[in-house]
Image 1 (spheres, rainbow, N blue to C red):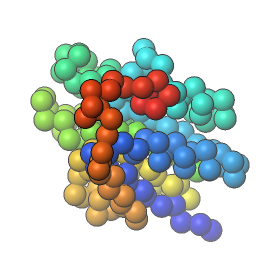
Image 2 (image 1 turned 90 degrees about the vertical axis):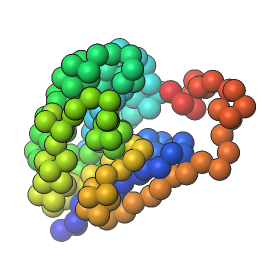
Image 3 (image 1 turned 120 degrees about the vertical axis):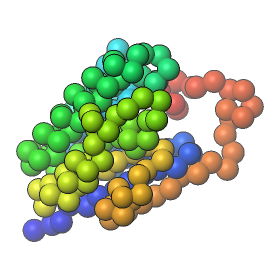
Length: 177
């Protein structure tokens, strides 16, 4: 019986979701069932990772409403609550071998409005610790909570050394979205 691992990709550098997508591809290639739940990204937009992963038979659920400054706090809170309920159900069902909570660290770090009642850190930690033993859990996003880091089997911190944004280059289709 294999033990499911908890992996955290965090930091200010580019590549956290990309690393998780790479794991999703690898797991699907090995016949594992994979689901990605996106806490910030909206179903109203098209993202390259979703287009690719769906072609591989991987479930991708963008459940957010986008950047915190584009919608009201109530819209974000409702989306976060729905995403968190789905994230819990997905992991605890045991139906998936690999579950990705994309940008959950960003969601947990929101301080522009209250989120602790719709996405409680205590519940996140409970799911991490009590999930079915075979389920691998991958979490991405900036500012990973210290308790989540401690509960993870792997923490990779991705930090930028140089980025073309610094030269005024906007987000590039296929590289950022």
